[in-house]
Image 1 (cartoon, rainbow, N blue to C red):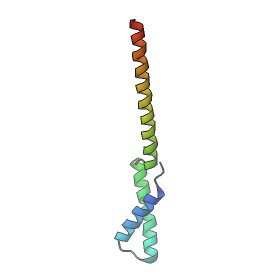
Image 2 (image 1 turned 90 degrees about the vertical axis):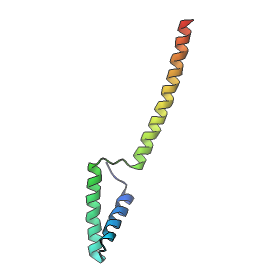
Image 3 (image 1 turned 135 degrees about the vertical axis):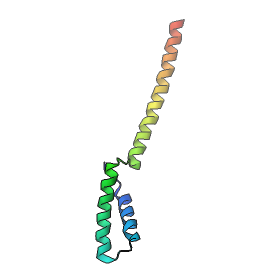
Image 4 (image 1 turned 45 degrees about the vertical axis):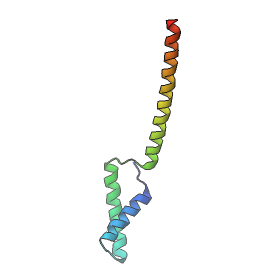
Length: 82
């Protein structure tokens, strides 16, 4: 699963900056840290904000449909009792 590049870049930059590396060494370290972070997060199956928002929207729609179906079932049961 792809991870948000901005988040990875930000995390890698903060880690590399924390090591107080300078110049080319910092850029190289930042790239390596980003690679390690991306690999680790993919193994952890981290969910992106976008994917979570889509899942939440689908869940909300499903709940609405279930509520509507429950109402229809109750109405049909009431008709059967008459």
